[in-house]
Length: 273
Image 1 (cartoon, one colour):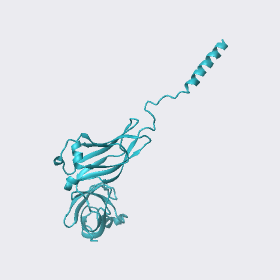
Image 2: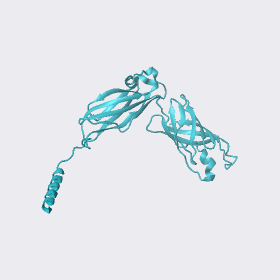
Image 3: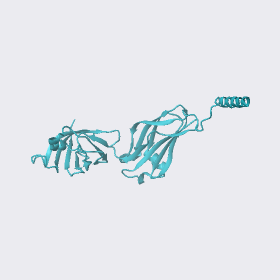
Image 4: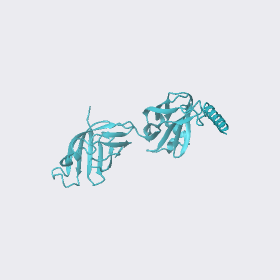
């Protein structure tokens, strides 16, 4: 009986050992197969409403992965409608999409587009192994106006704090003069302002330890300016809006500390070079 037992044991062990010699095929294919399109070098990310005939978005698409490219598709989406703009057969490639091409792909016309409308652009790559992959980022191409507010400004700030701490000689205050700098970010029309209140928060609240500048963020859409993504040093969201004089370049901007009601108006005059 023991001999039969050991014989069965040896046969089972041998079968199990031989079974390990064969590799099961991964149903998803080789993990290193496929390719991921990477968007970079975005030299234009909006369609200029003031020059739609020549408006375009341009960027570079490169390949990340070990497989070879079979096809590269540029896809546009607008108001739920998706369409193909065109295709490439190899990477890297510089992709230029005109405003006309973008709207035609989504069955729209340039006449339908309005300020602030967005066409989303995405890259889809099919590798020679048959794997499809979408780009690492998408481009939200806004129909807007070219913005050029970068520079140094003389700022005259007028405003009132709701806090009882600041003395009466500085609260309320008119025409408090400082210098602010607007620096454009990577997206057209979005700027960092070196001090969102034109220095008024530091003036009013140095009694609580504030000093230096408190940056904020502004967005310019065809001359209409708004605060965005800005929070004050004590945690209040900052809101407000204004405009740019197209002839003089002077920016007038009103601001509000939403949490407790401090208000101010900034008049920014460009410093001549």
